[in-house]
Amino acid sequence: MGVLALKINKKGTIMAKNITIYTTNTCASCAMVKKWLGAKGHSYDEVNIDNEPHRQAEALAVSGALTVPVTVVTKEDDSQEVVIGLNLARLAPALA
Amino acid sequence: MADAKIHDLVIVGAGPAALSCAVYTTREDIETLLYEKAVPGGLISTTDWVDNYPGFPDGIEGLTLGDNMRKQAERFGAVIELGEVLGLKKQGDIITLDTTDGDVQAKSVLIATGSGYKKIGVPGEDAYYARGVHYCATCDGAFYRDKRLVVVGGGNSAVQEAMFLTRFASHIDMLVRSDFRASDVLVKELESKFADKITVHKGIITDEILGAEIDGMNKVNKVLGTDKATGKKVEFETDGVFVFVGLQPNTGFLKGSGVELDEIGLIKSSADTLTTAIPGVFVAGDCRADATLQIATAVGEGATAALKIREFLEGHL
Image (cartoon, rainbow over all chains, first blue to last red; front, side, top):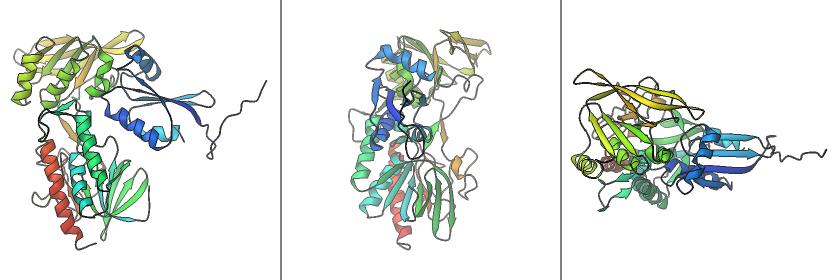
């Protein structure tokens, strides 16, 4: 069995390998999360449920909530952290 | 971004009052830092459409108006930090703000934290938050394509957001506690253009929000109320509830600070100078007692505060 090489940052936490954010066109908090991620140098995939309404069930399934923004941080060990809303107090540590 | 610098002015909030003040202070070379915990532009950024702000003859999207105000303030050098102010105290001439990024010090402070939407305070409201109970139509309306909705409230926000939600919902029951408090223009627009999709029920007190297990998830399915005229119980089948029943000032962080609040948490101030009970701490916009809760007046108060802050700082810079 091979050894799984995880990317570990200076604080010893497992780094994010993928970020997906669920948004709508009119959601101001979504725009802020995207702006914040960009300012911190994080790239992300965006699922806009106005443009892709069939994917709103996906946003609901992952968050358990009928709201956006929902940010899904997938880490190097494939664990996921889901942050609902514009919640920098949770998003910043998730991406630390 | 805790640092040893003593800022000329720290503004708590980045809504219309805050950004208007920042435009004026930065143009006067008063170094200005704003702290915003959510979205620059404030509550208007979550408002679908603004028709009553001068200078936009065809109206403007709330999100665009807020973003334009932010850009204008930043063009003159205002710095906006995303973070939350948790407390405030003054020692000597220095005001220290406890923030999520550490302590920040200033010679003057403007509190322009505005308001958030108030809850109804009925059973089921907290339990179904974001699972059928919502306070932001522009954020969460898209989850209700071809669904039935209830909108609670009769003010400008309720009418404006109910009309916005018709983009998604198949039908909306609007529960108004007494009569509309919204402007005549908005009410006429609702009645003339949206009567087929929005049914208005006046004199209805909302009592409870109920839910059931639907598609493996506990979701809202009914709103119970009382008809004030007859005293009879009424119920409305629905897939979700959007609540717009007034505003709650964002001033909780000031408890114990020495800034005087009224019984609902609005900040008391001198109407002439916009100063609070603490010298050097000013207030403008929706979080101020006696404010008239309009974007235009918030912008005016922001500009007035800037001039008063300049006068205050002339003795300190």
